Image (cartoon, rainbow, N blue to C red; front, side, top):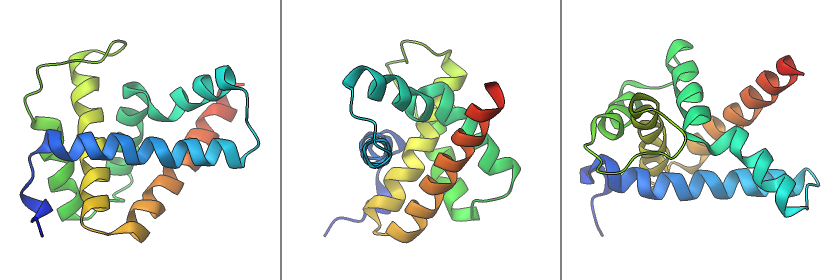
Length: 134
């Protein structure tokens, strides 16, 4: 069995990106959204680099994360990536990578309950923010 706590930030983010997106897709389907175009547009409110950067910054502001969770966020944020997001500046992209690394860490270390707690918080936060813009 591999020690997932030793993985680099980009490897954690790689898994975290996928797992977070699956939860968001499940949520949107459960909500009754079925048209692919609408699904994709709705998903970007949750999974874009900009959205993820916003969410992790809110988590940090509200002191939602444990010290250990912050450590994995920073590991992802500080990782040197040779790619960048299509629609985000480098700082936003790095912060979003930290968000994904945290999700990857929680998933790989089987902290499913905690991961789901944070994902549900994200879904609520995006919902609130989306309502405010209407």
